[in-house]
Length: 169
Image (cartoon, rainbow, N blue to C red; front, side, top):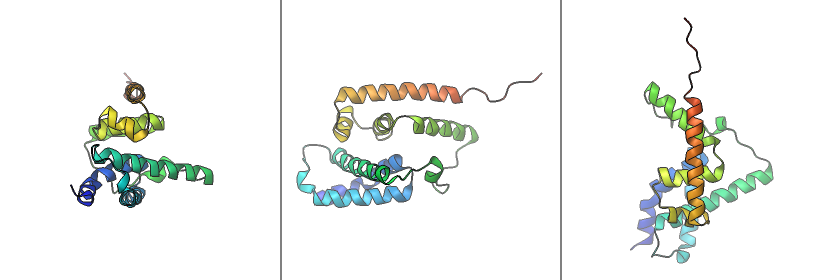
């Protein structure tokens, strides 16, 4: 196996995960670049018996968390409006767009730990074991965070499903 070739093949997955974490395509690309640099420097630490993607996600996540901590110390705060990019948005049907906005809004309202687990399991289709390894918690913690995230999403999306207008006769 060629580490560089395998790393190159993982770039689209890294970009998707980075965009899910940051919400900003430019920041996501910077994050992926930092991840690739770190992976090349630390390649000797990679265990080839484990999935490369899980290891790379852990590297990317650690870089992201470090950046968030640095921003908090510096007093930098981002709003959801700062992260929206109209060029990246798809043009779904009106019903699909409404549901997509509800899910995205509900996902944004989840605590970071629950959102992160939900993205890794539901979007990235990773195993609980791999997610546990990436975020550095036991598998049971991954399962409980995922369960809480799913319950919260059901409640939040249910709230958004209530009609905002009432019928007038």
